[in-house]
Image 1 (cartoon, rainbow, N blue to C red):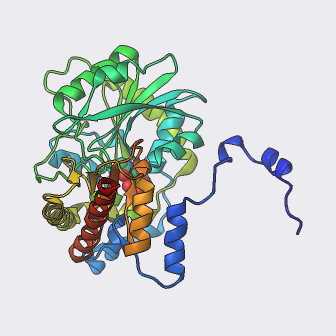
Image 2 (image 1 turned 30 degrees about the vertical axis):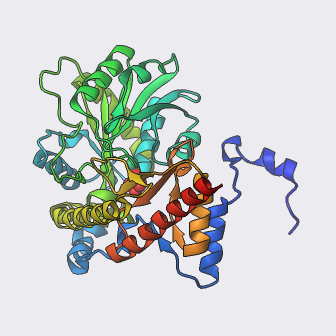
Length: 410
Ligand SMILES: Cc1ncc(COP(=O)(O)O)c(C=O)c1O
């Protein structure tokens, strides 16, 4: 077979797939260490199926073998019993979600895909927080959506400034995305912030997309309010889509099950449901066994969440012990599975991460991975097993102290 000529290839494929595919230096080096049979102390590990948690295999796998799972039911939003279980999940959290307002999907990413298709024409804009989850630029590009970033500020905890969102709204803005709590900052949208943003959406005729995959992972273990519940005294609500799913709620990303809860005024909900139904009907993407198993998985999710919360709490405790009286500080996080760490900006984030990998085989996220634009930021996952986490974090702190000492000596 001949090699494709570059000009020909460029016209053969859509512009949106002209990604820069050169592997980042850090990923290249990680692959090289692993190819040499070396072990990496991975402080970016956030796949819950590979972090040493106890999964009850029999209880989780048995419901997939429900006899009804052999039947193909082409239902756009999914089986009613599965959606009723999701409505029950919200009822336990004090939010009333109608079964008819729930659409099952295979992943939160697919949920974003459906919603960008539902709401945006090519070139329309969606507001998104920075720092934030690194998949958004890809999700947006795949749907010809332009992301417009609004800042999260750190001032005695993370804050949202509704005025900063207002200033970014244009004729092309269709929606605001909130991640509640945000990944990686762990910021839960406060009641006042929420009221101001919902009012902004009503005033400008925008939809609100709220990603609540980490809702149940408050660091203080106190339940937080879902956007699926109305605010007390709410006069007018915008159209709100709440996204969540099994990958975080039950730590089962491999099962590929998430959902969209359509919330807000009935007129808008009705219109959104009817349009969304056609999108979902085009794909019918959630498998029957998974839909049959969902009620059992949701019934079990509390125990899994308790294991994860305990791991996160212990790793925070270990980390705080290790950084005490050093040049590393941890930014306050209210929820989620990540820690954002600040250090004196004497070395670029990627250089610090590369040095750590080369000298200690420890992998951390340089801040840029989540949109931190300046030196002095790294992010670590709080899911790794505690002994491994403490070892890796100890090396990280040692590396920061060494670069600070070197900069001072220079
Ligand atoms: C904020 C946020 N939303 C969604 C997801 C992915 O969810 P899913 O596996 O359902 O696509 C992640 C994964 O880390 C996430 O951090």
